[in-house]
Length: 316
Image (cartoon, rainbow, N blue to C red; front, side, top):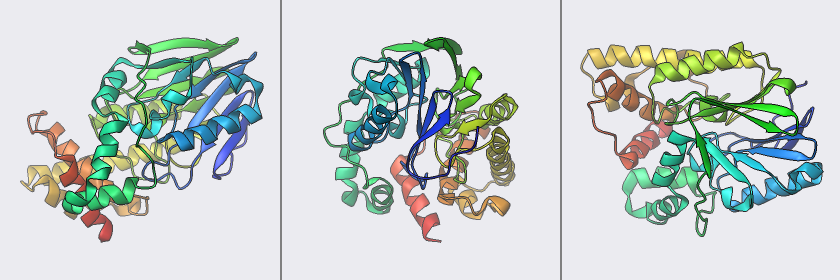
């Protein structure tokens, strides 16, 4: 299989697998996938709003008759840019890890819409939040939860094709899942991989994420479709791992020296990772690492305060 170019739209990976790619891969611009065999289909993730999801589904229907009725939808994790379009996949069995399903219920599209509508009242954090998410339309989206959940690992079939669902979270979120198609030598990673972009550690622990990256790199696959960024070979998972190791170690030094999480985020050198898109996410990553270093005794960080700090770092 060849690696498709990083152009917006549907890409035929061969053997009945497709990737939907959305440059530039930044905030909210996520990827998705389709697995087909013998007239059956499985969709990997929907998109951040219904307009984007509808466009993707129409392109898939034009590309293959198997997409006319999608039998299974797998949400790789709970972030809205991978599940807010679920309502448009009518009649499908919607599958997610048990942890992801619970997390989806906590942050439905209605809550996203409310924050965006009130962003101007939320100071610098609201300003940066709106900058990240104003391209998307959350009003009127109906939250559609998974109808089936699993823990650990599940094997499903699309026609005669085996599809392995591998829970590797908590890491990026609390229930991250890889979708591995062994016969096609393809894996869809959700947000375990941000290629050419900065990973964002909402949940942790970081060690789980590092292990997941190494697991992807060891898979016998030809094409990796990340949650954000261009499709790639499996070895690029180690670039994400190396970023996480670097940030973990630098943050630990500052934690032990008594710096606050916010000051550590401002101070931490990114080195060769400084060119990654959305580098300001270091603010979230350091705050989550500090909670991990404390044995999870520190309280959750205020999201709007984190967006304010990210806005400050982005302006630099």
